[in-house]
Length: 178
Image (tube, rainbow, N blue to C red; front, top):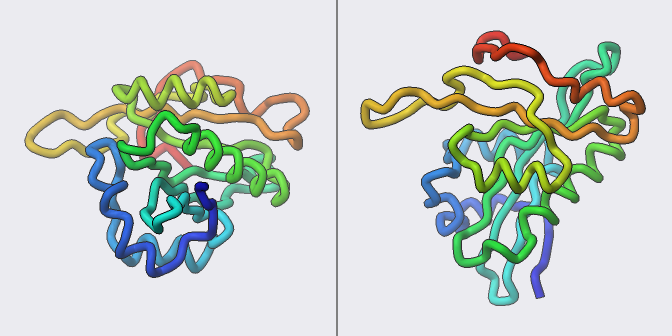
């Protein structure tokens, strides 16, 4: 049976099987520790019965309540290849959405590579829509061009008029994102 539990510092030494995926953004240890210290409720891991890590989600709460932009943000979601197609990503997203609801968020957002159609389609099945395109959001390596991202959003119950998910008519640059 899969266990969904809070991420711990020890997990940083056990999640290489998840982070080796080329579409998973990998960060330095201080970055993960910052999220663990500031938003521990948004950092959840799926663990197999034998203790192997299957996947994780890392996020935070951010934005302005006054401007109705207080929201949950998915910083990273990844499932190890051998544990995909089991519904883990959907369950982890559901948990982050529930936390964001409890914190009074208006929406949940995330960034995903335009080329990652498997993820884009999964997020659409989960009720997310493309809010805007962010030009050259992802830095490329090996001389490849930078890649655009979709900023995808899902309105939560506090956004009764669904204003947070009305798509922008034009793309933006990373420096234009608040």
